[in-house]
Amino acid sequence: MFGTWEFSPVQPRMRIARKRCAAGRPGMVGLIMLAPVRAAVAADHGSGTPNLFGGDVGNAIWTFVIFLVVLWVLGKLVWPYVLSALQKREEFIRGSLEHAKADREQAEQHLRECAASLEKARDEASAIVDEGRRDAEILRRKIEGQARQEAEAMLDRARREIGAARDTAVKDLYALTAQLSTEVAARVIRAELDEKAHERLIEESIEELSRLSHTQQN
Amino acid sequence: MSMFGILASGNPLEHVVQHPFWSERGVTILSNHIVMQILAAILLIVILRRATFWVSTDDLLGDLTPRGGRNFVETICAFLRDHVARPNLGDHTDRFIPYLWTVFFFILFCNVLGLVPLDPLTRLVLPFGVGGTATGNIWTTGTLAVCTLAMVVGSGLRENGTAYLRHFFQGPLFIAPLIAVLELIGLAAKTFALAFRLFANMITGHILLAVLLSLIGMAGASSLGLGLAVAVPIVLVSAVFNLLELFVALLQAFVFTFLTAVFIGQAVQIHHGNHSEDAAPEAGATHR
Image (tube, rainbow over all chains, first blue to last red; front, top):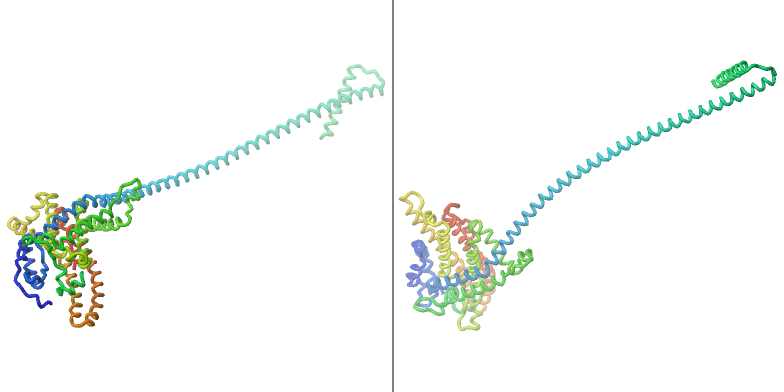
């Protein structure tokens, strides 16, 4: 099979290809460098042996037209959708990340504020409790003092009333005693005494009784 | 790849090269490669349109959550946009990304359609077979590369104006014209390499597969038993090799797109990056 291939000079079609394809010397240099390969695989076109580099400007025109049509149609019908989807997703992800970052910062700020508020509330509550305790203590002392004063005042008043009642009772007792003594003495002595002597005798009796009562009390 | 066809034809190149259906004065009007390109274009437009179409609703999360085919396409598009275009094009990414996406998917569809054995299937209903890899044609890949060259130069001129032309003339006055010639040669070499890399990668795998399968015919010609004995391992190896071809189809579409992005990036950002001839070491390392 491979024996049918033969080393042949550059065929006419390839010369056309070299002229049209090579945009300058580099293309031509490349083709010249590939000459052995080409010679090995591309045999005489006339005998019907396949040409590896087969093709001509017709292929180029078709490729150019098809590629441009594909580029235009996809550019109108497909890529706008893909690109907009990718861009939207990109923006959405970026927006979400930025939003999440902002939310996080805001949450941290709120947390700091809450912690500060909590601390402040705790301090205030503590202050309120302390103040209440102080007020209660003051009130307790005040009420206690008032109660003590009132009790003492009541005691003094009772003492005074008792003393007054006792004095009145003693005086009444003295008067009654004097009267009875006088009557008893008048009856006993049966003697007439003048008014002056009578009063002097009574006063002496009262003093004597008073002295005796004080002596008994002490 | 048509196994029966290869076995019958006896030449492994027969099913790799272009078969003109209609030529006028040496110019191909219609061929299997052209039909495959048209088929790729139609499938590309229909599939991508169906996969990616969505209508904006009030449900923003629903709109932004891709499902099914849209998920598949958008994943590829997002990767190309974020990891291929943006590092090279920066702020210009969204202006050039439709071109890069089109290049990638068009080449990918042409490459992958070349792996589908359409030739024997179409022979069942048509007097001739239609199949093959459109990107296994140097004229096709060359045209795509020239489109990229036009894009590179056009973008450079549009973005930077005369500064783009001036950047070809670097160095002292007596050296500048020489540098300009070298720069132009470099530009042409880039284009040529772009075209030839894709073409060669697409065609070599197919040639190897064709050679492997033709061995069955050669063995079968001597005796039926030998033909069957050779057929079993070769078919298994060919199946594995087809998977490698699928990978290469994807890889070459990516490499073409990547290098296009690099070249456009060099043209539009002549003041930013260093102007080196080989600014794509990654791509150089990945392509075979």
